[in-house]
Image (tube, rainbow, N blue to C red; front, top):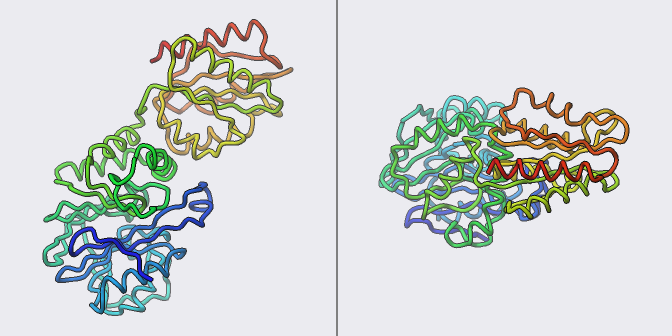
Amino acid sequence: MYCTRKILDDLFYVGASDKRLERFENLFPIQDGVSYNSYLFTDKKTCLMDTVDTSVSRQFLENVQHVLNGRRLDYLVIQHMEPDHCANIEEILLRHPETIVVGNSKTFAFIKQFYPDLNLEGQTLVVKEGDTLDLGTHVLKFAFTPMVHWPEVMMSFDINYGLLFSADAFGTFKALDGNLYADQVDFDRDFLDEARRYYTNIVGKYGLQVQMAFKKLAGLDIKMILPLHGPVFRKDLQYILDKYQHWSTYTPETKGVIIVYGSMYGNTENAAFILANKLSEIGVDNIRVYDASKTTPSVLVAESFKVSNIVLVTPTYNNTIYPAIDIFIDDFLRMNLQNRTLTLIQNGTWAPQANNLIKNKLCKAKFNYTSTEVTITSSVDEKTASELEKVAQEIKATF
């Protein structure tokens, strides 16, 4: 049975949500699922904007057939060839062999790789930067946005209605529970953390490319943003644009501290909470403490993009950095995180060296450091408690 939403009289949402999937890309936990968005114009010419993942194929295909209501499908625009969006190209073309597939040269190179036996002879329209597609009332203009976050990605702007089909940009984790629009929910409460986690873990490395895309979009009168994941933005667009401006320039959203620790027997954990308490006592707000062994790195990376200060508290483990902390460091380096103030606290019973190992690992990264590095020998004593108090003052001075 179909499940569609009318956006305009001649534009429909035909995507679907998946709440069964445990991990996005088999990597990032998504306890609240994810949506796969697709949109269908029923103008003088019909036009489908992307397809969806195989997990929701049945719902998607029923939605498309219902909205078409017997009409031919004139165009299928492919903005992004990642399989969570391109998986139903062949299914659509089996049902609609009349359809012209619209994409750029890299799009069709990727189609050949994903669908080596698919014959598109006579069914393709290769577009270039700035080309348009006239559907009748709606006219789509194409803007190439490579590496946001694949090289073939393009966005489509409806010149007459101000609709920006933004591919993966402005997307979020989390399924849509009936509310299609961001203004129908409390976005800060319901979606912001998942939008941040989506951006920082999927697109985060490509801040420069996002900024280049912003330059292309700067002169457009955008009235609605329609991403491939998450809710549609139709009000207060500056809100999500401002978030992307912060994230893509690696600028903290807020003054705050995350303390990320690894601890085998509780002594290093104790140091993390002592520091958190001392920070609170001297008036530092917005403090979060995370156990790197329990919290998924995708959350830790997202929190690192959010705040101004990161504290790493780790024992030396077999002459290396504690593995859970090491994984976290690898992840935020992979996402090109920068412009944060780091504080290093290490523990070691006989040969503490984690702080130096971390600094060597981060030697090319753009971080500032608080001047005091704390070394705990097995457990916190009066000396290290005093040093933790000093570190708290140094962190506060960066605010």
